[in-house]
Length: 398
Ligand SMILES: [Zn+2]
Image (cartoon, rainbow, N blue to C red; front, side, top):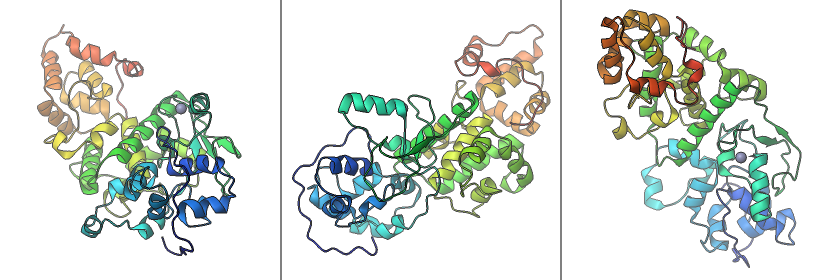
């Protein structure tokens, strides 16, 4: 870390408390601070050899120093950076350099210099907080809530509370002023839960090939818009649909300062005009594709070998978007399905060729009184899909 003056040799801490659940590094430090008589700057010195370490709530401080004073009991510098700071999400998306692998040294300046932006403040869930108080007698900052783009608790399905105080302090949930991230509609909650799922998948992935991710996401959008390749995607239409989405509406209302979603950001990212190593962008894009109903985050971020030959990412009937299945059930031809979904007929024919379940539905088009196979009906009746049970009318992908 640049600018760090090591004015003392690392001294082992008198005690090293274990991690609590999936708490962040900053959370552990704040809890440790509570158990000592130190002032803020002294704790910074004791843990990182840096008096201002409390400023670094979600990036990193001098982790090799921390590893020494904790005697490695909390993991190596690399393990802590990867699993206990939001930087782990960036590390999933940035190629590992041979230099890094060979030397085992952490490129601190690279991580510390990254700009994260909004939706990366300290956040917590009130329900989780009550549980932690009851179980451990203390609050903590969960990694699941600190990941770039996460605004809801995936366990309690509520909006998180966001700390608005940015001082140099070691704090725990409830210690300083915060405000709630408002989720006013069930559809918003559903979409934001998708974003949170995507953020967690990114964080937990060993390494994601961003070029492959671009290909996957582009293929999904091409299917949505009936374009033969990325060059034929209409930027105006893509942007218009994004702006009318629930996710964009929520971001405009609750995170208007978010700089990673500037006009045209989706195609800019997929066409390589803007950074693809920002995990928040990928989490938001995955959430948006889920909102469109055309790709689930877990298929977008699955290892390539698990998706060999699948450019539409549907493994089986349960994963085919209900509105696609419904369009096949309600239609009598590929052209009609295409019209209902607002995609090209060639796209529908490709789906039909690749997905035996859809091909099965097409067979019923020639039988006047046929009924949908029981498996399809079961898939349509799964919880959460009921809003799409009625035959959809011709409409845009949104
Ligand atoms: Zn919670």
